[in-house]
Image (cartoon, rainbow, N blue to C red; front, top):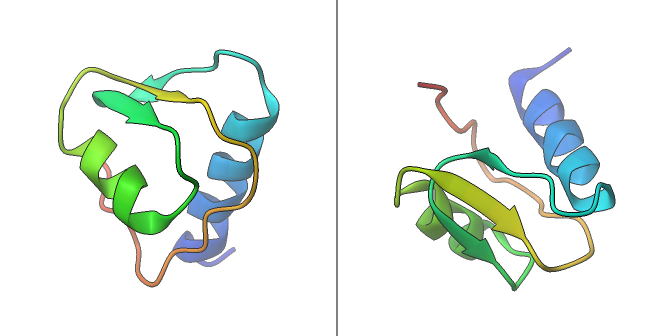
Length: 63
């Protein structure tokens, strides 16, 4: 499985589970790559308060 598809799948799963945090910091209230990356840059917990699919243009490196 390509890393981009894996990340997209994980994001979709996170969006379908209520109050499911990922590792980083911020709230993703608009489902787009820019807002996801901004939330990830914060460090801590990311909370998804949007519904939809976030399409990524590149792989997000894991920490």
